[in-house]
Image (cartoon, rainbow, N blue to C red):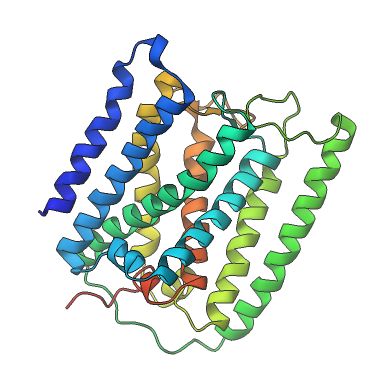
Length: 307
C-alpha cells in the first residue's frame, strides 16, 4: 500500500481515543475534533486505495485548482442542506444534543466538506476494488431508445415528488403545534417517513435528469447498461461505514436518532431502518457531485479507468 493509506489508518485509530475520555472532558467541541480525525482518516484510506488501484486521486483533483475547490465546497454545503434539510430539519430523524445554533452552523460549514469527501472517497475505494476484481465496463456512449424520454420524465416526476412531499410534511405539522426549528431536542410528533424517502428519491430523479441533459454518466445509466459495480459499491460501503461510524458515536451520542419507523427492530441498539436508508444519501451526493462538476467527478460512475 502507500503512505496516504497508512496516514489514514493513523488518523482513523486516533479518532477512537474519544472512547477513552472521562465524562468530564466530553463536550461538543472535543467530540467534533475527534470526528474530524475520523473523517480525515477515512478520506485518506479511501484515497490511498484509489491511488493504488486507479493511479488517481480525488483529493488531488479537488486541490488541483481554486475552481475545483470552490465547486466542491459549494456542492458540499448544498449536499449538507439537502441531507440535513430533509432528514433533520424537516424529518426530525436525529438531534445533536451538544450543539446550539451557533456551534451547529460552524460545524455544518466545516463538517460537511469533510463528510461528503469521506462519502465520495469511501465509495470510490470500494468501487476500485470491485473494478479490479470484475473489470470495469467501457464508458457507455450511446443510449437505449427509451432512455431520453425516461430521463425527461423522471426529472419532472422528481420535481413533483419534492414539492408535494415538502408541502404535505409542513401541512402535517400544523395540527401538531406548527413547525419549530430545533436541532438539539427531539419532538413528540412523528413525521411521516414516506415523505422523507420520496424527497430523497425525487432529488435523485432530478439529478439523474440533469446528468442526462449535461451528457454525464449516471447511476441509472450504468445499471441500464449492465455495469453494476457502482450500485454494489454503494450498498456495501454505506452499510460498512454506517456500522463503523456508530461504534464511535454510540458511547457519547454526538447525534441521537429519533422518530424512525419500526424503532423496535434494531441493530447495535439502533433502528434497522436507519441502516437501510443510508444508501440514499450516498446516491444523492454522488449524483449531485457528478451532475455539477467536470473532470474531478469523472470516475464516480465510470468503469473504464483501469488500464
